[in-house]
Length: 397
Image 1 (tube, rainbow, N blue to C red):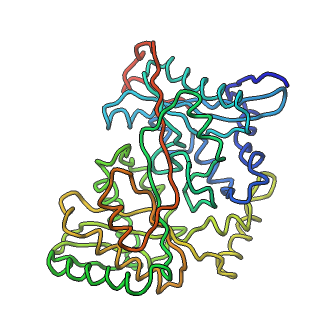
Image 2 (cartoon, one colour):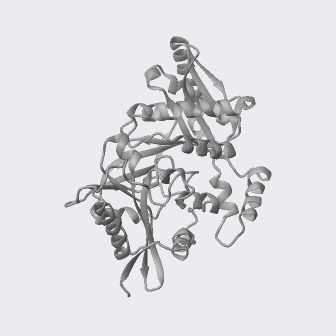
Image 3 (tube, one colour):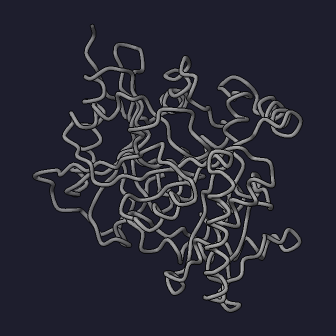
């Protein structure tokens, strides 16, 4: 067997190989969901992605002879380091065959890149921010919902063998309204009604006649509510605009709500239909014009009603209003809305393992943990001093 070589992506052909590698790796995996080519390109294109305005990094390919056998990205997220007062680098876009030598070479290359930049620790995987696909799937290897990462089960072993250790887990919970049962949901609603009356909480639905203003309210709550979460970095104005544009494509207004405490905006919750169910059937792929994939997607989404799952990607309560039961009130309302809208399955979105309160709320609503995503750290010894501060470094194109 030929030895593994690592090549930095520096030309269009290398980028194309890097871009298309997931379709090659997962071609026989029934759980992997292919992204739309345009969305995948927007994440990887340093000229188009808003995140690359404050990041610098490189992409790498692993080869055995002329065959690509893996990919990885190494990067510095300067906003993360400034916001959390850390000095770390990251790895992401990590995909590899069941090839220990290739995996070791890729992870070593990423760690060496971060070390050469003067940073003493590397963390990952993340591609490329907490608002995108983040964490390594280590439990629950079933079809991913929209914006969740998916990877081969053997990845964790490769990451640990390369000297990485767990630093944090995030969980996601599954709720089946029928399994939860009317009694459990009715109990949640009774508790919610009592809390709302006691704390002066009101919850109202998304107003489709004021879509622009409603998106501004979502943006306001999003950055404020998540500000102190582990690993979270506030979105830039351009990132917020991009998120709202994307959300607008998948929004089911029946599943979006705002909470108020005595007429002051306190929180929001948004559940979205799982567009991955549509993508799995339309199966966009390199070489197929995107218009063809989109027409298939419209057929499966609008005409055959393929989607029966929802995910809650956005939920937050401003710090001032925490401890008043705002989150319970919103959960009760959105779960009732999910049932009325005819969805059969719900995913709660990420819950940090240190967020015991939210885990308790979710479990009391009938949720059961079914997926675990893990972050890993590796200390880098003998890292040279950083050549410049993050303010002085211009992100690479």
